[in-house]
Length: 376
Ligand SMILES: *Cc1c(COP(=O)(O)O)cnc(C)c1O
Image (tube, rainbow, N blue to C red; front, side, top):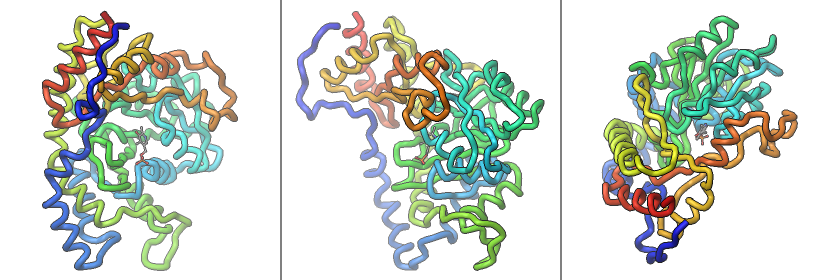
């Protein structure tokens, strides 16, 4: 790969710019926060309820229940869907570890399945062979903002009597056959970690569902199993959404559509700018709306490409360099290298290029220029 002069640090192109959108919204956010401070109503209350209504509408879901994080949303949704100790949950081998952690923490057993070679999401044709009498929930991930292939997955689940939970932590506003992520299965879990397409100013998450009983169970579980104060129907946990986060999320929710359109525009620019490069670009499918939480390209010499871009002052990321079945944390699942070849391929070839709302055309051109030069 060819070499380029190292630019000064001020030239550095970040992987993600979180500062600009927060600078633009800070007056508005601080005004609501000041009112909340004044009222000293920090947990629950009108801001949380308002956000839940607005986020449910955004996700085309009947109900949204705010919780403390995306991981908590997954865990509480699994419990609300009836997961019992020892039940198996089928999930992709290529995802962020939280997808599997939530299963274990809910008392379940993660059963890993390979992903699709082109979309990187749970491969429907691999699911059926993983189903056993203990299988309870199918947990596809809308990875990088691309919805999983939900129709065949839901059809398999229906045939085998499984519930389906979407891990929509990276897919706020994504669509499958014109339907929103968050409304495609029995329930969905969203994360509002700051770097997500909709991010809080701290930690937060939500469960969406069309099932009023599932919503009610998550409401109880997030608040110590309470139906009313000090009356505990079951043992729950403390996983409530706080008012400061809800208030910031309500303000930011009004911009997510614009931000997603900007992400998709950036993806269009990358697609044309990198068209002649010997590199695999993210798939844009006619039946899905990808919201590009991440823009992940693939190349066999990914490490050299990342190094070359770093020297050119361009920050990139790896999502995720080691698939779950090869993580020491899951050695007890008894897998080894070669078990999920497509997950391993994604892990060893994927490179996340800079992607954030408000990224300028010049910034995209700069990335394309250096990728092309490095691959020439
Ligand atoms: C971020 C993320 C989570 C966890 O969300 P947190 O809010 O960080 O707990 C779960 N699954 C996926 C795919 C994620 O990207």
